[in-house]
Length: 206
Image (cartoon, rainbow, N blue to C red; front, top):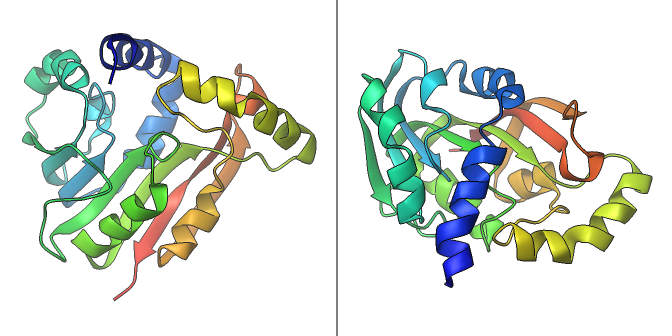
């Protein structure tokens, strides 16, 4: 990985994803999390202020050393134990049935093999455990989708491999999750091509 990927992209993501407009979405997606939680794409810890007190521990999966360092102030401010315990969401170093819940926020767009990451999440979740997610991906409107496909190559180059066109719900169901809650919408104040969000809960089968 080059300098831009390791030193610039994490700072861009920290700023772009840390805008106040995202706070209500982070609060919604974290609501109801409890027990031992695995968070993939932990980034700079932007979800930490929204962790409910019912969480007992968070195992953070984050490949970027800089992203982890940028999280230091948020880590110091929380009483919930958070430990960086993995670098690759596609290969989680945990036994089967380890976690009570999982969290993923604007992560599946960037993981090179999102299918593998979701299969790994399902493996390490206890049967019936919930994955709380908010992800941007393929838009519900065809006119927006056409622009997403046009802009996707540029988006990947500028934002560390981020895809605009991944079908989030299809990926979840293909990995064996059952989507039990879902809200599909465009984020206010953002270009539709980059802000077609799916927010919800998906449960892992037995």
